[in-house]
Image 1 (spheres, rainbow, N blue to C red):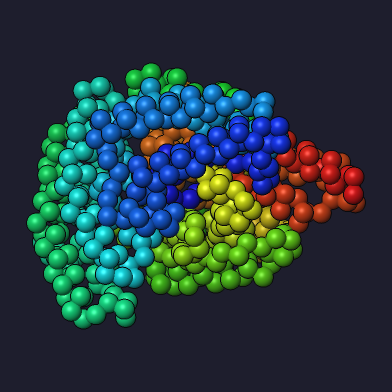
Image 2 (cartoon, helix red, strand yellow):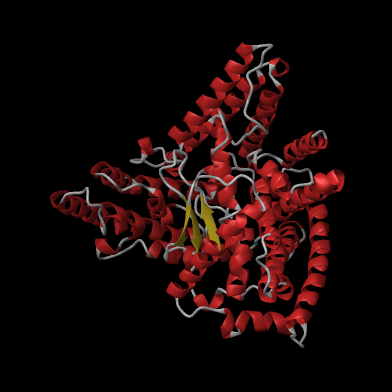
Length: 588
């Protein structure tokens, strides 16, 4: 999984190669690329957070306008952009630009289609919202006085952001568009972390605890004084207001059900999400069946590895052993972080076995911030800045080390850092002559499918020589297969949260802490988790096809490079590209 607060709003589209301007109609190509450029700029202006994550610091002093009028304006602009795209004569474009056109249209059409579901009426989730707005500081530069002044301006605007969030929640109550209570019960503790008596203990104050050498002593003192005053006079009072409204009025009205189908127009909403995230036309029932078959297949592989370890008990007993034996756990957060970093370093030199092309952008390993760690996933990836000013980061969860088994570290690191998400995003930024929306594109089935496929590349890299690490890979593969069953189960087949948790525990050795957080994630973000397995299965299927058709000519390194050279695209576009690649390899 990768974390990006604004990426879902970006218009992601990508050609399978560097675009070639049409020879037939340069005017059509010029109009198309002007639209691409103007929409990219609009995305940065309207989402300052998105700009910050992309390393564009022009708007670091502000937040997105989350007022109802601003949301309506952005939705109208999306519809207008789609109309402008459709006015361009597609037949006058080159083949590459036709693919650009089609993929851009796909994302714009989905953006317009989802407007009717009014997702903005749930502005707070258990994994993020105004209550965790301080988290963006993780990726801000803080090198100059202006960087700090920009952060002070953002802090001063928190009252407006809180008021807008409350207004959206009030509108959601009126419309009956409410999140599940079981998730919202996690939020009061997150809000409480922002309500501090000592401003220096506020999460917003962290950037002021350490300064670069370029900041003078006088400036440091002034900035710290202003920060404490802003937190005391604006930030904390705003969060007290949010706390009162959320705890006393909103939380009691949240719904007791968990299914997306219980929302207004909920069945259509979940059907849309399944199509959107998987970039396929698969139905929830079809995905559920795929999941059941994959669970059975992986279960058989687990039995073989259990026998290899010499464990004599049942699979359930083996899972308990993997969850509880002290030898599988580090004792402290510090030791756990060091183990993660050592795992990443172990992978790095093996990458040449499975790739010809290694991206230039570096990456680092960081702990997930303490204030969100209890309620978030095991790890996530944060892409680097588009201008190369910030590396990518692999964030790992150090909360409760006794729930973070070491046997999962290799597949997790392969997925989140290299050659998973870091390769995917870093290679995207290196696409030659591509407009920015192409370089930063993100389709979940491709992106997370690649991450899950990358876990399997550990076999080709010689990393699963220990049977417990092998079991870790199978556990992670099972995790994503289970998702197909429990996500569709809860949102389309009436499964309860407890039934989903138990099914997960019965089929995976992941610890209960992780399992509960995962199930709650699927409840809070319906359909997103379906994309991983569907994407992985397509990439693996295409690899098998290439190996079968090319025979001795098949080069795994060339295949992996070919998958990444498309950037992020819908799965049907990837398949067309790989079919073309296979044909070109045959001709060599």
